[in-house]
Figure 1 (cartoon, helix red, strand yellow):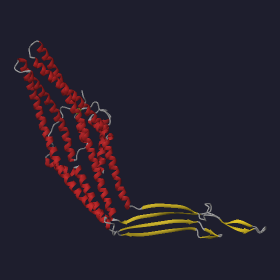
Figure 2 (cartoon, helix red, strand yellow; figure 1 turned 90 degrees about the vertical axis):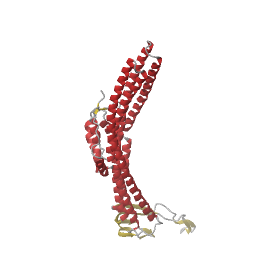
Figure 3 (tube, one colour; figure 1 turned 30 degrees about the vertical axis):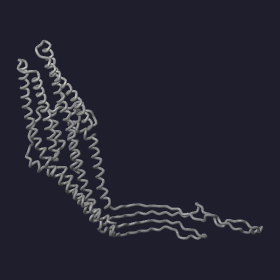
Figure 4 (cartoon, one colour; figure 1 turned 60 degrees about the vertical axis):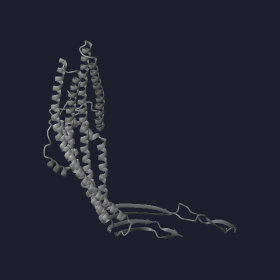
Length: 465
């Protein structure tokens, strides 16, 4: 529990100092995402709802106290009135007289009572193990929620650097389009004076059309990247800070064995699986205890007031009385149609399922960690190679353009050399952003990714000039 609370609190405390600047850097965007991301808020609501299971399981073991009261009114009588002919004492004539009244709601008997009751479980092993299972499930849910927060950091980072990736690609495409247009103008002018053939103009026109189409597509991709970022925070970010050129590209600090040892104790996926296994085992203990006797104690105090019944002017019964009761109840389950054994078998299968899930999580952790570790170090080598490819592509382009001026190279070779140079620029930008994301993925897989990593990354961002 505390791990999740510390995770959220740490971010909010440190992000307050950067939110006031109003700059759309990655920290300010992450702060907005923490407050506005529907996926995270849904996960938090689900976590808090599941956490109530602990309270409900504990409540079964706690005393239950209740108050009851009632009031009743009782009326009775014949359905129809009874009449007899009675002689009049003066005239002697028979007079029809009602001797029995029919039912009426006005006369009646009012009774009321109130009482308080107390029930307390004394011995119920199944409920006790259910509480332990709920606590383990709550711990698993807390770690899962922390994993959701790490996932939000990754989603924000990926969306943020996808925007930067698209911005760089668009800038490179704009440069390539401008270069293709200049080349087209030059070839058209040279063809007009008869220095080159019309086929060179066609080749230049094709290169320009391709560059223009690529720019149009990249503009749409950039807009999609902006919208993906907006979907996380709920706010548009038309301008964001860029990654500085001197951002350090370093190999992973530490050996693979050291990272595997760290991940074994800090991996959130493995921790969730361990808590789920513990919860399943406690649930199995509870189901094994379903056939055990249970003991509970109950107590009751009641006050009863009964109105006396009048019969021929004589009061019968009635009055006030108090009642108390204390009982110790023993329940021994004997047979429930096979449901108890069925629930026990189901719990055994759940333990097997949780054990295999833990094994799978551990295997996936090993695989994912090794892949992430290797990718980061590979990114370092790739970036270094991309830098050299830019230099060699630039040299090749310069040499080809010079050769075209003296007539030893043709326009097709110039266009191909220029395409290679711009492709080298795009691949270099991609490699840098892959390195940033892969470095964060390595920490996420290990379970040590925190907002502090974003704060440190934010130091290497700069505003767009």
